[in-house]
Length: 88
Image (cartoon, rainbow, N blue to C red; front, top):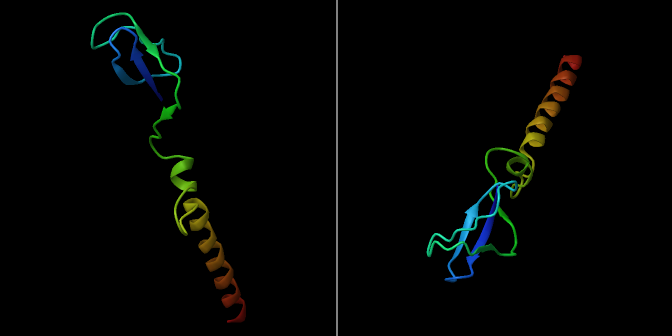
């Protein structure tokens, strides 16, 4: 969910609100209780929650793709064990 910034035109109070994109904009200022709260134009902030592509694809160092890293060693060990049974 995006985090939106608001500023009251009456008292100047600034705040952030975690809202769905489909939610109506807030209008009442929590500080002065006037209906003069306006959404500011700013960079959209959002929160990544749970496990997903950002958990597995963007890791530092050798841990760039955890799903791909676990599949590769298993394939190598099967190939080496298969050749050992053929020679033995």
